[in-house]
Image (cartoon, rainbow, N blue to C red; front, side):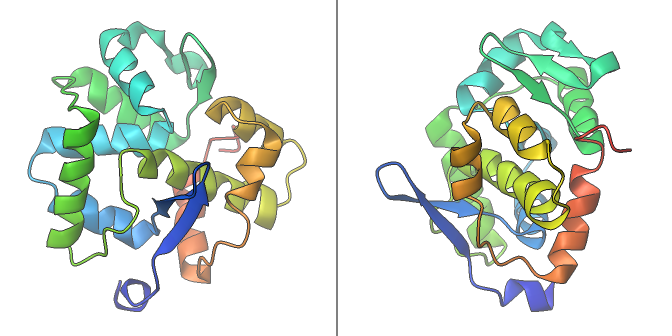
Length: 194
């Protein structure tokens, strides 16, 4: 973590030029460890590993039967969300737990408080960070590094974007080789590549 913690924050801009944070694996773990309760960590895992929009997380808490374990997918009203092995674990953990969902503002505040407690710059950190982090990790590994031809379209469909949007936010992110190895283990199974 020492080498990674010295790395500059990854900040992208979207839409109205609002800064949005993309987490490095070590930053995610540090924030996770700094959260105050198990229910916070369960929700964090679900938010990151599923890549759901905040509204979808709220919807999923009320409709956990939309999870199809046999296909490693969640069917929301607007799209089908693919899950990695870690995503499956996160969904199962959330379903088995109290399904506590915070307000968007409360969740963003919890992330910032945990980041500061972990001595991580909280610039651009919000509820949207986790979704954009997972999308960036998937594009980085499956599209930019492994160059899997169908991956970009699959990622775009799962995240509800066009392939152009999925790619333009994720190009030129400066993950280290160590981080790429960690990310590969995190996204394992997302393309059914167990």
